[in-house]
Image (cartoon, rainbow, N blue to C red; front, side, top):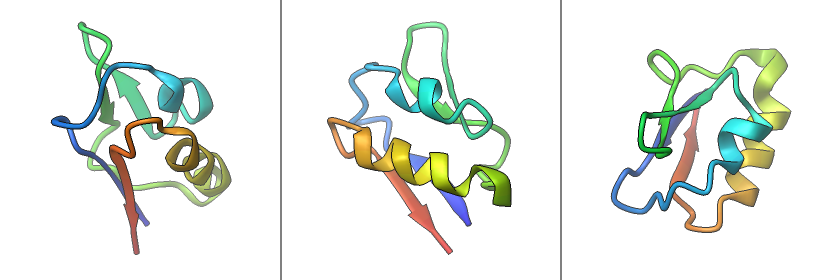
Length: 64
């Protein structure tokens, strides 16, 4: 599974990085980005889905 963040939708709430820091990180201005190429490790699937659900701007996508 791969994660992506739509930078045009992100408003720097930072909840994704709090919920799933192995997949999401914050840049120097507090906006979200994926770690590496966005591959979600099996052990982080549940927290990545929680980050997707909790994103107030719906800026996160997960694809197979």
